Image (cartoon, rainbow over all chains, first blue to last red; front, side, top):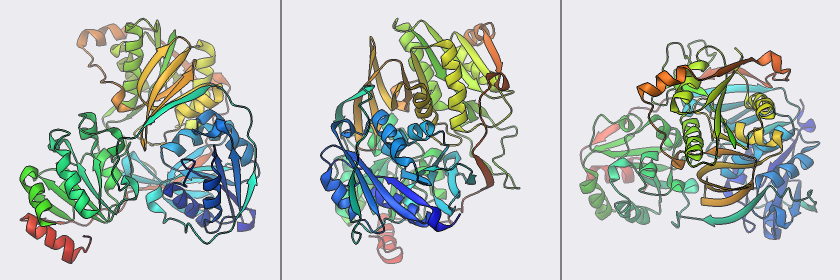
Length: 314
Length: 249
């Protein structure tokens, strides 16, 4: 397949105000596939998103469906729109966030196409690498579908430049509201200044933190480092912190410059979410904990002594 | 209401996957297998709905050959009323799985389908959404709280930004997350009872579906390991290393 034959459609994730950073990584994956890149913005009163999307480097056209039925990205309406717009594209991509994971398989099935989930590398326009088994294996897969439907694991693709492009903006309309689902409310819990998925430094706590109150120690260290706070599944399941702190196979997959794992044993599913970090620090009182096998710097210590000491040293 | 719960047999989550030397896949020979953890949460929720009087019958469905039956027996031991095993030796992709499940749903006409949000082997996170699409039903994914009131389900979804609540019209396909519930342990008498519960076997070919895979796996390899690190003796040494050696703070 020559580059000229390829046309990429990237579905933009946004909150009706701003383009989500993860979309810029998906655009980079489209750039590596090659050919034209168009963006699809579906939302309500999302003009500022369309304007920002048009400035992303390398984008030809931004298609905008601005309608109340797209305001909360409900899967039924959004998938139907993606299917309408996908005609004529060789690749349809979205970030592998809960936004993309929710809607894209629905669109793929309606198109009668397979979905290639969470690609980490583009080998060629039809061949991709994706992690399986919590990242303990990497599968290289070749797709025979006429439209490749793809979700992109953001940490393995640099963000495309958010400025420098001058795409045209084209208004489109979607079909009727399916009426199948309705949005009720959204509760955010991780209100830290620094967002977990884009933080350069992350301080995470595990079961060893013992309770939610003790996470205050990690927030204090994080504030000094300009870091985000994360957690292992054990800490989330124990109710110490809400699910949006969770780093792991079924939580967020992150790759900060520095990851500090505190009181985390290092279960397979946790390592899947952080082992691509550039530098890993493990602080744990159990010298046999598997987390030490992936740590660049390990400190075998009682976290209730080490963390206050670390806080004071910063 | 009848509920279908989709379950998959996977490598035990505590076992680290080992890639075969010839790069053809992951070695599952003699490996410890289990019901996909998220699917256990889905089944547990169905059982609680039955106990609350919202559902009358629970059917567990799985696709595969050989010991797939064991996983279904585990579902029956947990408390499902009957099982359907669609038998095939092929490793089907999620789209094909969704097509097979649709044909079972068409036959059984449940009011609700529950599934785990993802299988921990191929980590695709697709099947529930695809099944919902093929049925033209509503969907809610990554659900950590579920309340059914007549023809509406109120669901709390675990999303990247926190918790989102949406309502969906029934019938619905709902994929569940781990915080939804704590799956029950199976007791020995339940295991014995499960042996007498009905299990239908349906040959995949008899369904007349196009389940051809759209992808070929060219290679499976192990990711690069991390180089061994060092153990530091003190917080002061750690801070020094991070500042002056790694230069990350």
